[in-house]
Image 1 (tube, rainbow, N blue to C red):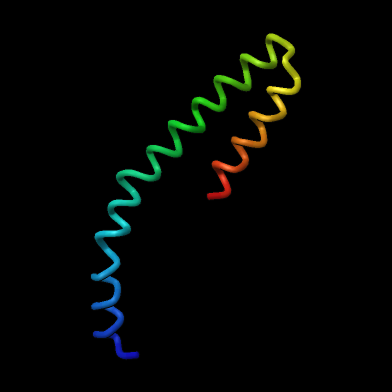
Image 2 (image 1 turned 90 degrees about the vertical axis):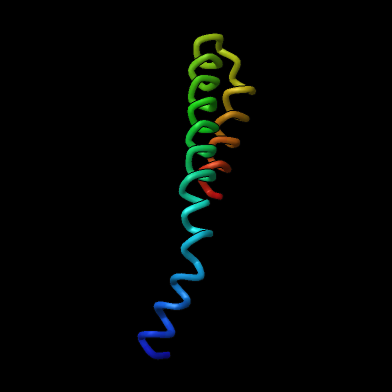
Length: 64
């Protein structure tokens, strides 16, 4: 593949990458912030089953 072809392919991906940066990343950060709040709340209230579930869900958020 020539350098010009690589530039064209990168340009085609640019809108999708920009959308991901503007939408997906802030959404995931907000979701993680909510998980953090819930984790602290469940620790304080000693709700261990819910705390465990919240840790699992936070881990899933990070994996995607």
